[in-house]
Image (cartoon, rainbow, N blue to C red):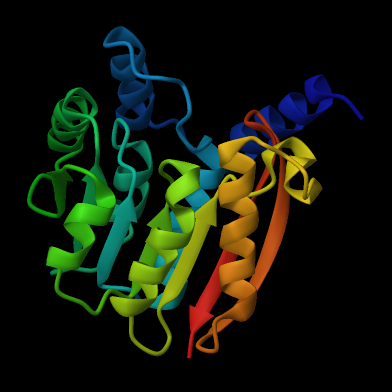
Length: 217
């Protein structure tokens, strides 16, 4: 199997299952125009996040890692009336672009972007959140997960992105900080008494990676 096949299959599913979305296409174009890294979730992954928000009945969402707001918009659209999403972004430039994208999507009253280091902002937030999506700097994943649990309630869904690292997550000797962060995140999920967790490997336009997912008890 090759990455070309993965991309072709993703394109097939996108064309078959996802309607044309000028807003999300515009988000990606705006992100490119202003020099943001092309590390957004894929369209199919964004659709999955939105569906998981709906399935869980979440009303209060927390996102750690906004980038240009693509995943924020996917999840924000899935919220019921009165729902709210707080997204944390370290880079001021990224946050500015995200806010503009969110406003164009008509979600400025639904999605709030806070700027700063996630581990500095998280202690200032008031929980509980119903759904937490973690997609930020990987070395800090254990700290983000710890705060996700602290700010949760029984039934809160927690999703941590990019845990497979092209398969490098299995390398206990890796010196890559992102791999170490991913392994530490898995260890955290495995050892926390309030969490029931699993992980899913993914292939597609984003290469070979995956999500870790947990429910708080």
